[in-house]
Length: 224
View 1 (cartoon, rainbow, N blue to C red):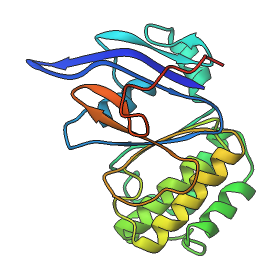
View 2 (cartoon, rainbow, N blue to C red; view 1 turned 180 degrees about the vertical axis):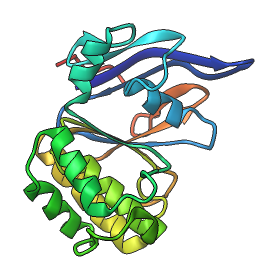
View 3 (spheres, rainbow, N blue to C red; view 1 turned 45 degrees about the vertical axis):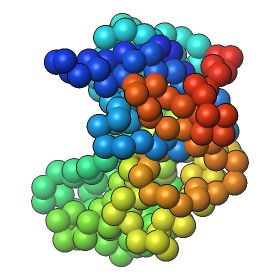
């Protein structure tokens, strides 16, 4: 599981996060909401090591990562799937080549990634370059590349933003499936719609994470 404890981040005179805490045990999906500039993306980037906190710690399976060695981060990231808010693929790359690269990167054969390409409605696009895909199709491709290898941690920043309602429903089903097999999932969203049963909703408020169900800062789970 992953845990953020007392994370603080300041940009210039603006404090974006102020003692933010969040814990996601295996088998749980957390949907994080909040206004633009509330710190959602900053929190996600700190969890996956793209930004460093001014103070606080990130734990993966009970082991601290803030200040950890590059090898420790590398070992953790092998089991993570991360989808940024703005998906950018290498220009001129055919979908099939991108699939083969990610299969090698994750140490799998082509079967699971081909199955996911079919699930996201992109079967038969292997010879097309990524530029030939619409924005929604590129987003679905990014989701497939995030989920196909069954990661232990899934972090997705606004994954539903460029999807139509039908595909948003599919995304909700996919995240539910991933949670049921034991993944820890964190998703940011500004869309006011249901992500399915068993989802925990939190909100970024004044630099802290508030559990909507309890209307208070969430209690830290025991590290696993």
